[in-house]
Image 1: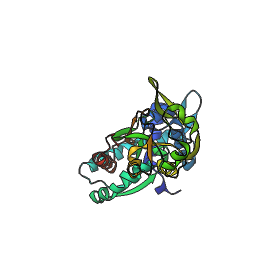
Image 2: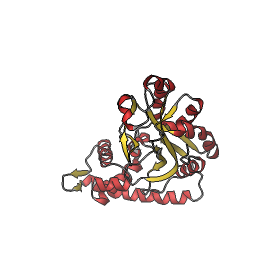
Image 3: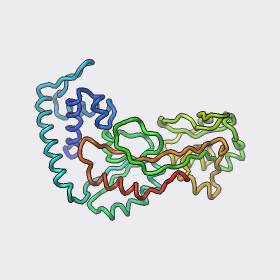
Image 4: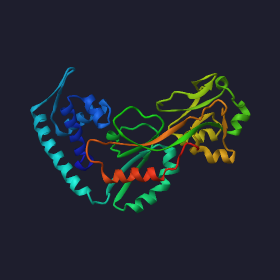
Length: 304
């Protein structure tokens, strides 16, 4: 691994937070990471340097002599970098490579169509775009911004709401002709569902059952890695899927997919957020202008 492949400033920031706050868990909260992510980062740093920096025990952490020397130099370097960024950012145009991770449906329908406009407005910025519905660790993936739909895990990440979308349960006409149309939560036991290959915050579909809302879902016959794959499975007649309305609105309009359970599905909207690291160092201009741009262009209001 070359030096260009390593974000040494980020490693120094996380390392100094571990020392200043006295542990991986506190540093993880401050940096918007998981404790395991911080531990892995420190282990990679030590492996790259070829020396142990921190003595670990179940009760406390302590620095080795090499760790003490590295900490002192890292604090000085980070301070100089922060001062340089403050001086340069006052009138500097956004520039540099921006790494964005987006869930697949939003990325395909909203983000990618806006990329030409964003890059034309900021010619000093280049873009790396990864579409994935799996939850990512921003530090491990070296991503600047991630766009996610639905509930967010509790963290110290910076969050900017981009909009919201209504959720809908859909199936193809061919599937409904063969299996019938479910009308009540109890009907789902006789149907087939399309699920996910990754853990979800919500395990089932929130449906109205009597006076309350309960999570229900048909037996899963197929699992998809992302919302676009689930949509294609639903179009193919594999089973029922619960997807964002903006993702399937055109399919519903053309009759390729049919909404079901509308009388018992509250259609609860899910928020769409841009999440990014903040608080550790000044926010790079390229991240700030991208988040501002997406917030100004996203027109999802929860109606679709």
